[in-house]
Amino acid sequence: MAEGLNRVMLLGNLGADPELRVTPGGQAVLKLRLATNESYVDRNNVRQDRTEWHRVTVWGRRAEALGKILQKGDSLFVDGRLQTSSYEKNGEKRYSTEVVANNVLLPGGRGRGEGAPVREGSGGRFPREPSTQPGVEQPFDDFDAGGSAGSGPPAASGADDDIPF
Image (cartoon, rainbow, N blue to C red):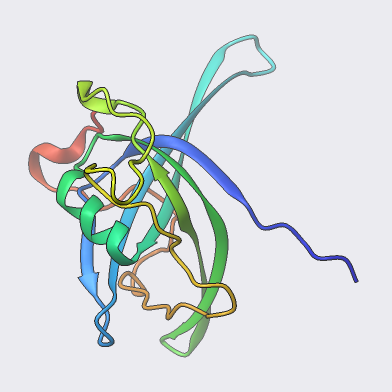
């Protein structure tokens, strides 16, 4: 049987500040809410806009470093893979799909002028490292298991009702 390909590339904006946690085993995990926008013309020749929300997870030292510099509204390019997990809520089996990031680029959102990630040892702001080791399954801890996984924008409160892009 031929080997498959599981690859996702997204360019969008953070809809909420990132959430950095540490697993019981001591590994950093960063949870992101990324919004991608698409524009199309409908049957009536009227331009329509559609926003899709994506749950993105970053592991390891990259998660720690990005957690210190990213904030709501930042523009990101994410290269990764899809991972689906299941959990039970109120006796009902539910599924949650997320993007596990292999690489994250800061294309210059919010006027920072950042581009490609800096390689380790070059004095840059964050190291380049694989987010997973080959053949080693990363633990999955769905911090948002009780919510509606990826079905809409993140919960906002007060003045954060408007998305900044």
